Length: 488
Image (tube, rainbow, N blue to C red):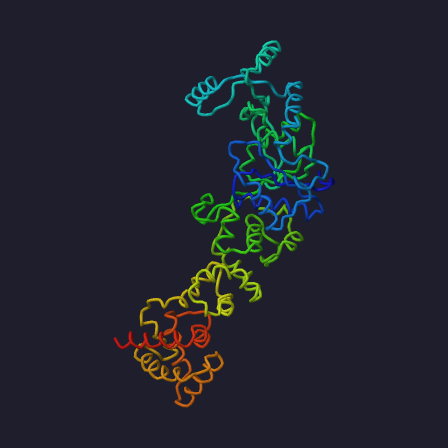
């Protein structure tokens, strides 16, 4: 398999938003293909008709496109291995043909058991030994019985005929050789009663026919791999290279939850994470580069990615690290690029204050936010003066406290009233001239003044930027209100 052209695939089901785990599978499959100069395929697995969701196919295309994971072949790009949608392949009779081939070889068989028998058998087995395995009842039907049942139109499934003795061994790049007793292998269903293939069977047939060299999937599929291997062997097909990637958990080592809002790609975009940061972070969930630098663009990931370095242990979705990484990507944006991204939310949030200089405010916020959505919280004081404890006027280094602050604000308020040209430069020059003339230390005045107009210890921008943005009327009114509060 190592000498063949690398061909990987991402095979999502159209059942809703793309889970972070699925995005990582797609990303790793893409990186393996592109690092090795191979092809990356998109295949739609819609055999589970019940779970399909309207519009989900568009979500898959949109996500892949926006994430930059361009497929070389897929439903919209025929590379000669189509159709690339499993329901279309099912209609073409591909799966039934191969299932019947296995029946002819004795590697599969028709099963006509009804739900009542299966439920009864399951209950008895679970009561006795706690594990359910189909009992191969229909394996022993004669050819005549099978033909009569088929002619009578009796519902059936086709099951894999796995041995119940001996062992099966398979190899995985990450987990090495794994051997399981055949007694643990159930005769899994290959073709369901509705004529559709099961996920497991369609995967094997499609991967072979599409010449997939490397199969990337979550390690929850490790337990199914022996059954896949037996199918490859039954057909006499070459087994692909398996790459089972580790589970992703939250900080509490629990499954990623929709409730916490970070289980899907679109959740993360809606929370204000940049696409480039999402791709970078997801790549690090189970893999790490050889050097210390973890901030990597998609082309850099393609260059560096070695699937042999994927870890076995579960990957923790560290939100704190993710927010830091995202902030680094935000800092790389130009002020114009950043404003383009936050403009809609800022215009909505400050809808009643058209006089505010939103691009200037955004530029002040850019280096201080971790997500795009942090921007409105950081700038919220421009909309409304928050309640605050006067103790924040106290600053040892600036030699200020509420009493000093009151004195400074009472002195500077009439000076601000005299400024006709309310530009940042003019506000700065007027205030600084006053401080110099009256021998007042800069910090002793500017610390209380900034708090008086923002209500916060820490702000994007200093006193002069904030005064300029607020406008003369609002700025002076806030200073007067702060004086009144300090007097009381």
